[in-house]
Length: 156
Image 1 (cartoon, one colour):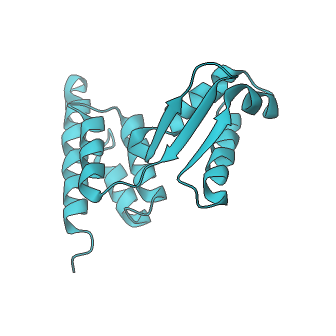
Image 2 (tube, one colour):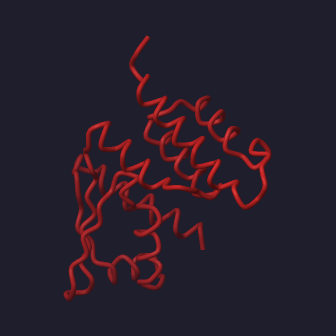
Image 3 (cartoon, rainbow, N blue to C red):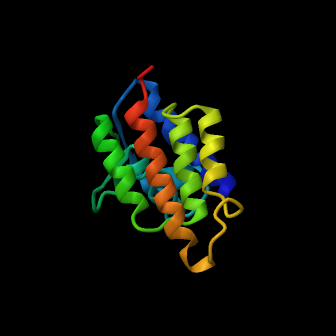
């Protein structure tokens, strides 16, 4: 399922980049027909790959074949950091944390080297604590790294 999800994600991102647009409007059913998949698969891609913490806002309109507007957010650094911190919450699983680090790397907000260091720091191997508090410790580490990186980006 992830291969078709990757293809749909790339297609939508290309639509967004075509005219340097901040948003595109698509029809869920039309897109599902184009990729020969169920409309629910389009929903899955939108809800997992185009989230606010990844810099997107989805507006859904009822009727008319499931019209959806995808907006690429242009937000300031402090707002973006707050969104990330809120997304991390009190605890975060390793897959969600890894996805957040990948997003930061993909948006060139951290270097590849920084992303590897961050991933190593939040790995289960590094967090040698009882399983019931691993995700809480992981959240604290990730939150601290993000705040530190964004407070020091651009400073020499």
